[in-house]
Length: 120
Image (cartoon, rainbow, N blue to C red; front, side, top):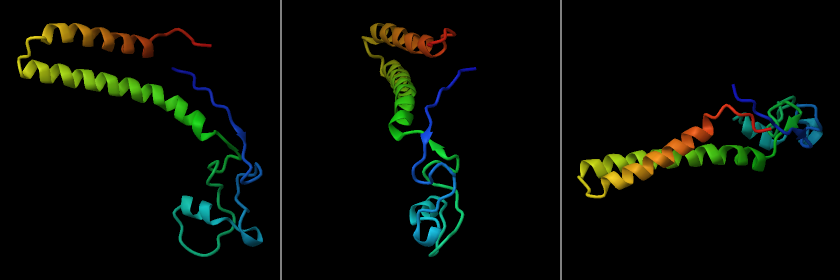
């Protein structure tokens, strides 16, 4: 199993309590009400929409950095497989060369993600 590390920082929206009190008179703010898909004027005691009620949150840029590499790898593999199928169906004369290129690249991406070595 892969070990996912997360850098959590204190949530300043809820002051590390996990409960939003940022609205008027100590009620929950409209952003947290919208996060929970609630409609109405005033709610009290909603879980913080910024940190999900944990009191600590992970920055958006850090979450994006963790997701970009796998999404890029999946899109490259998908596009290569799709290209191989299309070139095979249209009997392209350069199909063997492209197949060798695509299989090498797909093998490299697969080896990178299924390598058992710890990257610590």
